Image 1 (cartoon, rainbow, N blue to C red):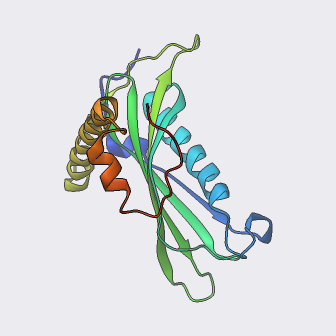
Image 2 (image 1 turned 30 degrees about the vertical axis):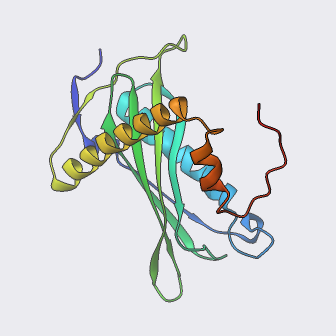
Length: 184
């Protein structure tokens, strides 16, 4: 039996990992793909912990790389369920990197993953509702609603948008392109 409502705090997951030379890209910074892998893992853990079910990633809605992460820094990721639908959850993740020698901490990444709870047969299953107990809980839930609305507006725009229209062709001509296709 699923609990009808749970506090946001019931979803909190924190992981920390020391960044090693094997995690670097060609410029010597920690590879964004490695960070994305860790983000997906913590989003899964957070959503599964909250829902009590196996969860899958439905979409990665936002990943903002704000600061580079260096070898030797301790990366800490904090995740919480910000919004719940019937079977979906928006998980917000904050990434911070700490210079172990100086104690200096920098905000490196903010991400939002939409996760969906599944039953043993792979069918979507209802998740508990959220109990909002703090102003942060309320702010994050409201931001989740806004994020969903903007996503719907974007999808509607994409469906109705005529990329071959004279207005669009004029607009894109102001950008660094060379159009070499024949439009029918």
